[in-house]
Image (cartoon, rainbow, N blue to C red; front, side, top):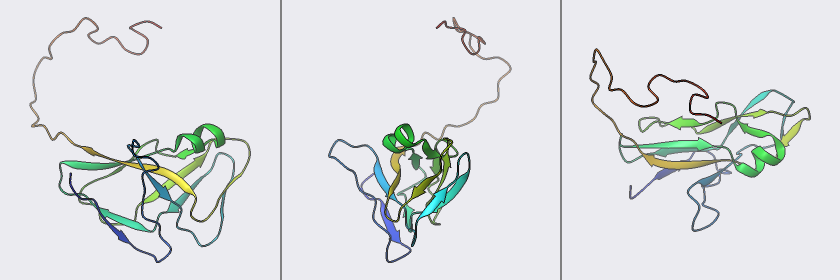
Length: 146
């Protein structure tokens, strides 16, 4: 992918940035006029003030937690990983859940998540009567040991 097009939907929106040269994700910022409190075990939808255009259906934007916010504060995307499809042109918003017993306040321009652009494999689907066997086969959770 050579270009990710980003449209600012509000004047105070911040363009996503990679914190370091080695960062895979670009930080997304809360585009809010005033602080938003997320009560314990509740979800708040936080706008970023941007929309994106991916180059083709061969790409997707994933929205992941910022590890510091999730691990240190218990604030993470409510759907674990957000998916922005190539044909979506609306505002990128992040549903944040507070997984702690204490309220947390999101400040304007706070880094709330990270966006990673990734290629997508779009396979043809073949319906079959049988699947090939493996050593694990249909063994479920914990079947390979601890």
